[in-house]
Amino acid sequence: MTRRTVAPAEPGDPTVVSVVRDAAGRHVARELRPGAFLGPRPLLPSPDRVRIALVGTRAGLLAGDDLLLHIAVGPGARLELVEPSGLVAYDHRGGTSRWRARVDIAEGGELCWDARPFVIATGARVERSMDVALASGARMLWRDTLVLGRSGERGGSLRATTRATYDGRELLVEDLDLTDPELRELPGILGPNRVIGSVTSLGAKPGGAPHRYRMELAGPGTQVRLLDTVAPTVEAELSAVWADWLSA
Image (cartoon, rainbow, N blue to C red; front, side, top):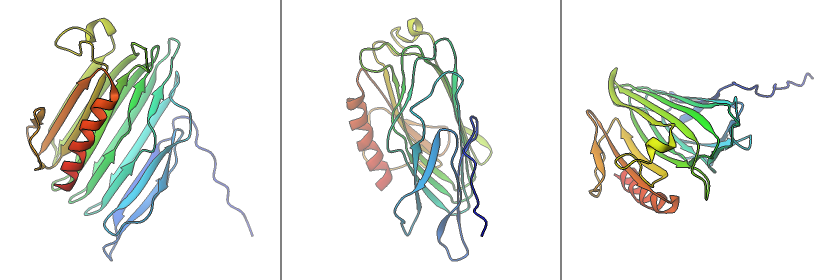
């Protein structure tokens, strides 16, 4: 008998999660491929979705790291992504790291992604991009928290871009340039705040309770974004919005 060995992921290898719905109507994981930084782990099965945990396989992002994530949801399939812990970008000592995700959701597909906080420590320089393509009838619910610095830190440099399309048309396009601490701390930008948290619905406008910071997108989508000086306040309010929109 020949034993098959799997080569360890190399730097730059993407983490791949692909979910489909088979002929019997079951939601199944077609591909779960570990990357250089994250390993997809199946959770307890659910009759109406596939539940996958994105488990970190390295301590965090260092200079030169390039975290790649490819997510695909097939027609009518449903995927829930869970992150057991957050991610920290440490002092890069003059270097740069990247975090890049590409999400493709087919007709009638649905993705719920409950992301944990992403911390950019002082000295880190991070480029982060999220690229989402939704077909007609597809939906995505995404929770996201960015934290500039660990406790007592001012925080590093971050450039975060998001581009989401629905049925081929732009739904959300954002370039969040937080690379210069002097500029981002000006009144009208972040001021003293160093925590940016969001819950975003793409492909659907959820019902639920009204929220003072709710923003309707130019198409089927809605976002609530919060700023604060500490993470627990933001996380508590985002949890309430997430639960409300998830049930709605």
